[in-house]
Image 1 (cartoon, one colour):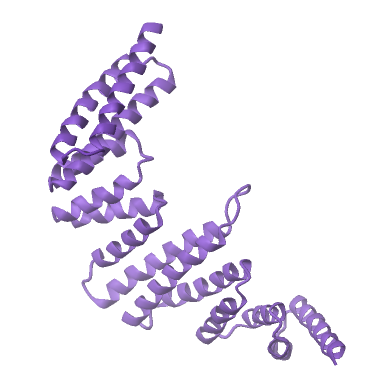
Image 2 (tube, rainbow, N blue to C red; image 1 turned 90 degrees about the horizontal axis):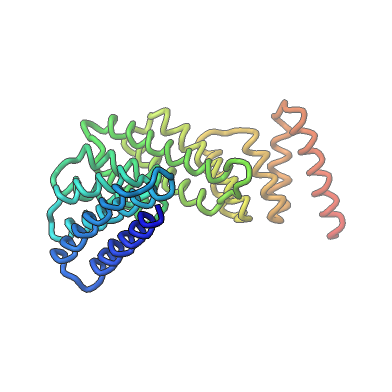
Length: 301
């Protein structure tokens, strides 16, 4: 057993040495050869790995790393079919290599396999974390969407906007024990809002795009409020109110005006709210806010 472990560790070390060499100052052809040698070594580690989970995982990860690196080297010399084959193996062995979805998509595009490219870009958006790659993947997906007519493309954009909003909401309201990422949510809402707007340019009466844009504006306003960007919060609420007058949004804008020190605007919103609202609880809050604002004015005088 000890001999096997010692041999296993030595093989891993030898294989990764080859991969390190392949990543530094070698031509792509030389690097591909080094990766092939590393693969042969890592396959031996898989053969001698014990039944324990840790050695098996280490061997599979090593193989995935070698396939991944060779796949990227194949791309550099425009051998895109070979790159797809290697990157497929790397993802199969180690799904955590999310960036390989993106680069496999780029290889699919080079061989004009648009459907597979769309699938991989979608997978990258599900698992990938690198922001500039996510933005690029989103751009490619938009360009690759089937465009049989404007209505169909608008429907695709509305669906994509909803997906982006859902991701943003997950960052804003994460699972218990995880800190909200308001800044990350704002970025995704920006993409979502832009996508909904494009959908409405193509199809102004698209119901899903309309309600999606309204929801994204409202939710992004909450994200802005969480990072105390009051002007941007109010800007979103203004646009949402133009899309669809809503008393709860009017009340919320009044609260934000109050928080940001715009007393007169807050008074106007709460007064208008009280004239038309039938929501007892919110009316009580609005009356309380108006009293506080009146006292603030009196104190200032």
